[in-house]
Length: 333
Image 1 (cartoon, rainbow, N blue to C red):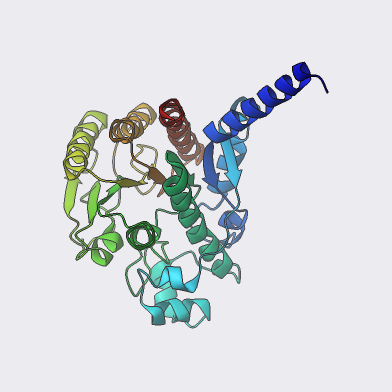
Image 2: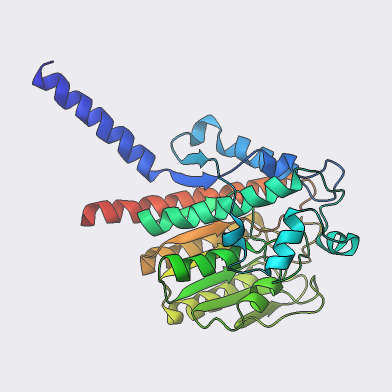
């Protein structure tokens, strides 16, 4: 083989590696949808519709969809009561406990679905801690799960588990959880209430679930029907608080249930306003030059296409920011 062809092959390999490295990694499994019963009130089809939208021809250079492995019991009990974990894994939760979680009627796949969902969050965390940049899980943001019970469609709390893992496995000392779901991150607040290394910020609608609120480090409350300008002003305040904390890692709960079209939201945000919210977060991630993990959170618009479009905007914004971050890292090395 001539030197000319060797150089050409090397250039092609380098180009492919560059493109692959700059794609936004997102973890996804078909059980994210199929592990929920078709008759459940939860809009399970949003995952299938979203992955199809992100895999459209115009996005082939932007995303790499990765398959998670199941989270382990040891990982779950870092943020949860071992008895609660074991009762879920052995299908011994009471009817009352199951009803409080929702997602009913349950299917046998609810257990592997939950473990894979948690595994996707953990894999995204491991990726950004090793490679830098941004990664996401195409599910999760399960912020209503408490230490010893689940609630509001949430069985285990991926934000809390990832925080605990980042503290122990990667010896971080300052982690910021930015929760912009329309509902308060009550489970995250209670699990991490005595963990000074983790900053919990929840921006949410006051007149919404959970009706008995917990106490985050910062609860930034919005009135019902708040629109883009009012919400984005509070977003700016949340990001100022985050900046002052000077985190080494950001966990972004990016629920889009604040859209005016959302059935459970009670806010009045436009798609453009929601997209601006995300861009503000990713601009801070770039400014601080720290890794970040994106958790999808809630989204229940009718029709569901509004939710899918907003989540697509979220991951496109994450892709652009990730591309900028990794380009800067590559230039530095």
